[in-house]
Image (cartoon, rainbow over all chains, first blue to last red; front, side, top):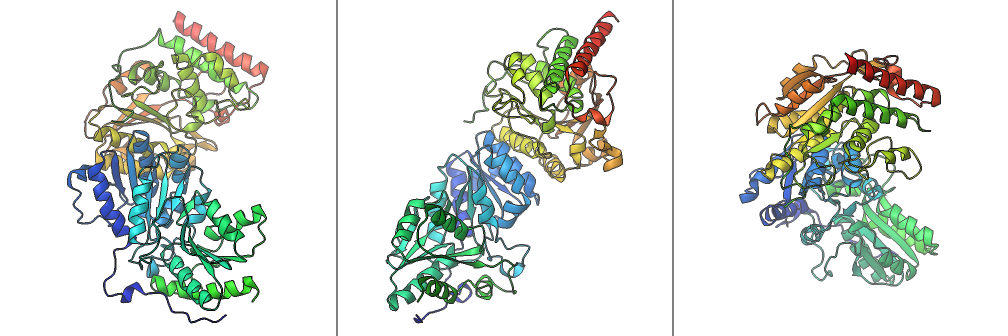
Length: 326
Length: 290
């Protein structure tokens, strides 16, 4: 199986980049602040809101400074008082530096806090290992009561944020830094908690989460279809609660499952998929694509780091070939 | 709009009989819980008694018959290991029958060794230190957004002040001018290994809080009149948070363990429990005659 494979689109070379997920979020939050008096924006000096006109919601924007533990604790106090705080920090700070506050203050109390976690995965690029978040999905999917969402593009970011707004409990939303490619225009509507089926096929299932992994999955599926391997692509944008039904249905109808994520290969999407399939005793091999057991190698932008760390179409194709025994 | 808006009973009046009767009963209940199979945090609960009795019988706008009433003041026991002190005060104040405390530490009882919100009157689960003051920043911000004068009292241990998150919150509260936020430090000077000043020193403690933008009051933490006066004068400045540094004695009420590090946790068998109870009653009688 050596179908023609093209490299993923590079946003840095795109002529008219669509907004990044964090910019979509920022603009939507201004709308939420003005439409709903319960909404509060708690910032940790991210800079995301510089120059933003909050209108009459301006008094409910509070910059708590560079202090993520206080950020999470204060969000809990606000939520316990009937507010809906959106807390703003980077994914790695939300889930490791302030993990205990996320666990005890927010998740344990099942409070309606929305954690807007930018710089998910390798999107911090050349900012380096201190700013990469390759652990956040593993950490957040452990926490009871927490919903964990990874939007795929500008449209799904807005859709999932609107749907998450109605949830009574806490929500972790993994956002990126720079603009990423749009999903195909014929993609079905995104629904929180439901896998998005982007392609149908009966030989292989590729399960992906996040902007680039989903695009890699689609490209790999095209290449596989061209050589006669009909491939299903599931976008598991909601890591928790997992759409087990869709996953199991696809796995049952396939001869192998490959997962793709911008995360350490252990603990995140691949692990949750492998656990589900193993527990049910489904007779399908699972192969996981992600960053191996090391800090991300190389320096550079997000797309460079993805390639450098083995999150590529070629890797997906190789894993599929090996799993299918071809 | 929120569950916390609305009216609340007035603060400052004294709800109850002679204070010494209440503090005696609370201490007896603490000793009884330390006599349970699992034991309890004795020393740091005994040091809290006058602080919590004053708050629940005078300062806080709370209704024991309606612990979740809108508009109530919030109390967070950030030094969560003082839970049996809080449970005893809540029971003695009438939030739930005292007899229920017999279930402390029993399987599936709501009375765990750190505050459990399943207990009426407990607002948040605490126990990992350094969580209460950041939560208090959130409660105080919410009150500000609601244009409410409800207050949030956060009771901290002194050893707890070694947690960095306390100072993240202290810095933010000072900068934001959260007049509705009150920290009460149970300054009993001891942590598990010994004096705070021998571990990582806190002094000059008042100056540290002041430099973070807080109004500081220092008070004898076992003098109910002094505590009431300090709490009733809050806030001295509507745009500044207040810290009350309450100077206390760990293990207060049991002279043979007072001020001793070993009072931190105790599992009292029948004889030491009886000794403790008779000591408390003898002290009460002596004070009543004086």
